[in-house]
Length: 143
Image 1 (tube, rainbow, N blue to C red):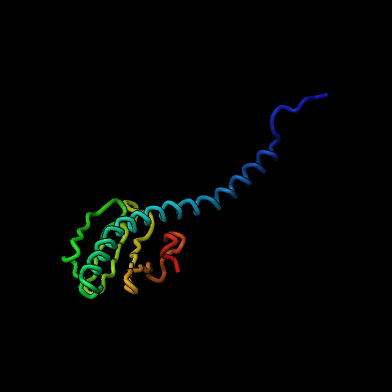
Image 2: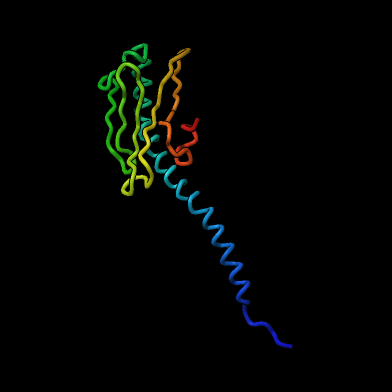
């Protein structure tokens, strides 16, 4: 009786085909995940602006009293966040990611953080422009 040494060619081809299918599914999902985590950093940077707007609105009595200067917020660019701007009179914050190869690796995304003041508190609504790839957007900003 002869003992088999190793694998047959067909067994190796089946394993390679299975690995190819798994890689074809997993690689795009992983790329979206890494871009999404880099986009989250820009939202985390904008958290300081949210705090500045909230404190100013509570101190001044309304969101209409907010200006870019009276909040005291200043932005310093990070690896993945190119701008964070506060809109005067509304307190809306626009945080824009740094897209492309040197930034997130995906398209640039502009997160719009809109405050709503009611019953003594401020609630935030996050949105992104139409056409943005939703798999690269954090869950809190998806519709």
